[in-house]
Every structure is written in structure tokens, then in C-alpha cells.
Image (cartoon, rainbow, N blue to C red; front, top):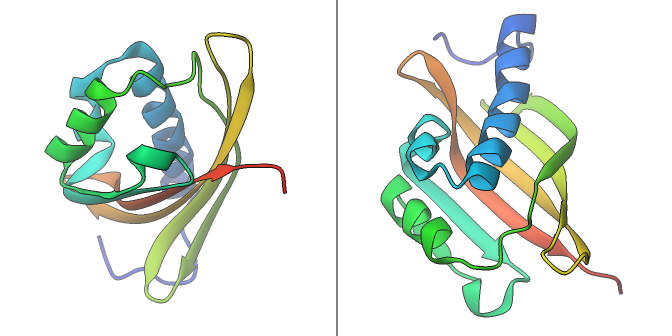
Length: 135
């Protein structure tokens, strides 16, 4: 793929939107193998606002281990407000999730992603997840 310009074609934008959905579906289905098609091998995953889980996880293996060990996943991830941009020489995606928990309580988080096109597909190279809380 050539160096990003400030414009992505429609096919790239569609694939990136589907990337957001692939992540949510993988987590909801507990399909940990599918994370390899979502993240780059050297991806960085940073959690903020989740208490004891707040940390920086490096590599798709560490991200998978986090996901497998966590019992606090929502019942479903509903991805919304996906915005794709090209800035600072890279491709970025911002999105939000709404997720109902096992006891019916609903939470929301913001995703801020830096993307990379490799092995013929878009992948998340860095994800910052911030839990949304009322002030």
C-alpha cells in the first residue's frame, strides 16, 4: 500500500469500518483466534478507567491473554460513531461502544486507534480504550 494521503478510497474506508465490527464480533463470540485478523502482531492495547485492568498490553498474544482472562466483557459490543481520518502520516479510527453487562447495566467506552495496512488488510496497530463515566 502506498504512503497514506489525506484521502482513503471507499474500499479502504469500508474495510476499516468492518474492522471495527470484526473486533466487536470476535470479543462477543469469545473467538480469540480472530484477534489475529484484527490486530497487528506488535499491536499495543492500552486500557484507561478500568481499575486494576488499566495497563499497556503489547503484542497480539498479550491482548489475547487479557481478553481470555477477563470476566468483565459486556454481553455485546455495539460499535457506533466510527470516524476514519488520515493525519500525521497515518490512518486513525475513532469509535465508541455501548455494552450491556450480565446484570443489565450498560457501559460505554471510546476507542482511539492507529491503523496499519499489512498482509493485504487493515489492522489495529495501537488502541487506547477509555471507559466513559459520568462526571
